[in-house]
Length: 70
Image (cartoon, rainbow, N blue to C red):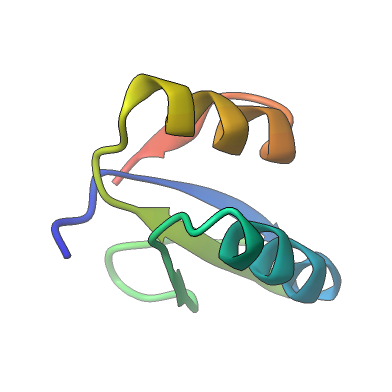
């Protein structure tokens, strides 16, 4: 999967978001902090490939805003 954008979220929200994304069949991976991703303590990143605009709008609504460029 070519990584395009991501959202950083608290670990406590990861389960709910994972279930919601799986239900609407959106491709994603979850990453922990690394050299590439500087996240706050206790956060993980939901990483996505390029998505069709309609699918991106669902993701944007779920996360409450636009993602960050990977």
